[in-house]
View: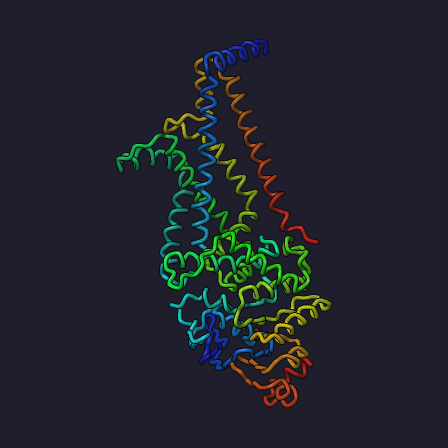
Length: 236
Length: 260
Ligand SMILES: Nc1ncnc2c1ncn2[C@@H]1O[C@H](COP(=O)(O)OP(=O)(O)O)[C@@H](O)[C@H]1O
Ligand SMILES: [Mg+2]
């Protein structure tokens, strides 16, 4: 224990004097960017897929779309995120001769991946909304998509908000895999500080604390959001 | 106004409606009776194609809306529907419930006008559309004495209040006809009266109404014609006096002995 003080000193030296904090900030920025934009893309894709999945299936087009969606979800839920990331970065994009920064690739892959998970969550959310809500909308002459957007999805999102918050937290934690394609995230930033200071105890401890603070902060935000959305439930 | 020709409806292999023919004239009030499970709701829901008819036609204002190629939304806007369980939008305040469809329709109309405006109609801004819809919605809320509930959510209303809001939500579209599917069946007894009262008002104002109900008093007082549906067909039809005073078919006699 006696040399913990020394270790902290070494850490602070590399973190502040040698500019390690800059990489940590960049790493934090990338981690948040990947998780937040990934989540937004995921919600959009997930909502579209969930909508296709609850469509009546007696016409041909919904059947075909449903098949595509089933395959999509099976693929992204059936393979590890690292594999998807590696396949995108080292196989798919080079084959298409597209050159993208690794953070951008990570954002896209995270979006596609969480889209698959969120579609299942969202489908449950949509099915939990009283079918009478759709009938009420269609009966006054709103189209299917207008009723979906204005009535069903807002209620579905409210129902699944806690689960969606968990998905966001999962995404934050999973961003540590982006180092596989050379993107700088929190893990990479602290790893470099460790390498530069020949000392890993304090950097990894600080990293863990940052992750925990992030997650607690997000959980708090979700709770606040839930409470403000619950006001339409209060009965007299 | 509505002409139903040889309407049939089957779910999977169950034939629920087996050939219904009926004409509903402008201003007419029709009450639909029948035992539970006889197909009353299915009949009503076929009228605005909430259920797609299996065969037959629904001619509404001259258009066969059972034809899958027509834009059903446009026709539903002129055919209000009131449900047993109200189906108010839970995520919208009372006034938003009433304004949602009128704003949607008017915005859509303005978008079309922007492309082609042969009569040189005035193009309203979104703000204008919303203000007009709000004014009309407030008028409707005043009519049912619920203007102070404009900004609350449906969960804060009593059943009777919910159903009256649902009725004026339908009215906000200026429909040609309103379909009611057991509008008072889910209500506590003390709230039935206020809803029936509002429906009677509409009837006196000349609204065309098709009402599935077990309220025999309402049927007697308001109906121009009563239709008794049994086993997927119209077993008997006539004025309330005829049906209640001198029922012909045994099933109707049996039914009336139970409900009267
Ligand atoms: N969506 C549906 N799928 C399958 N069967 C249905 C559906 N809707 C109604 N039915 C059946 O059709 C019959 C008539 O139902 P309904 O029209 O609701 O009767 P009513 O309103 O007269 O009580 C019932 O036997 C019911 O089970
Ligand atoms: Mg019924």
